[in-house]
Length: 158
Ligand code: FES
Ligand code: FES
Image 1 (cartoon, protein in one colour):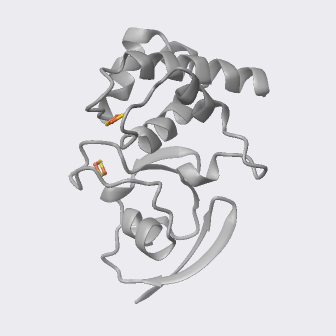
Image 2: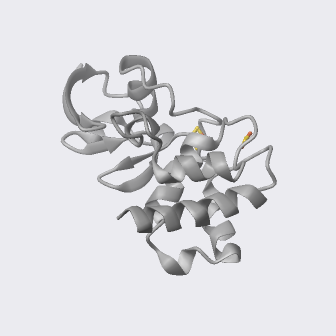
Image 3: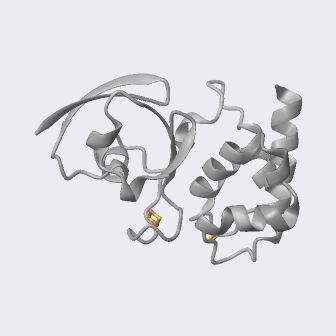
């Protein structure tokens, strides 16, 4: 077993993991953060996207030990402590940017990471940027609307 120190959603975590443990399994099975989904296990779908030091990773493709000492944010870490949704979560709700919701945590984590990149928010460009996050339900139209609205709300909320 390998000792590991991480900050997850602002909380310091000390755990021991097998060297082969994937980050998504540490989050879901050990830490109980089941908002991070597994849709494929082959790096295709993006349901498992989380942030490491503010940058997106597909957590099904990264060993937990590779994140020793890093700051991890999952979908559970976005909302305010008082329960208010993060502006990007609220935008997905307001714009109906989800149907079954399976892709949504990963989609939102990707959206938050690109929200301050003005040039990526033009709809055609945004669709390209979301190519690593697959949605089987929505046809992406409302997801694109939600990401643009969420990015705007993030800007306004500072
Ligand atoms: S579960 Fe990680 S990309 Fe699909
Ligand atoms: S809302 Fe169902 S997969 Fe995206």
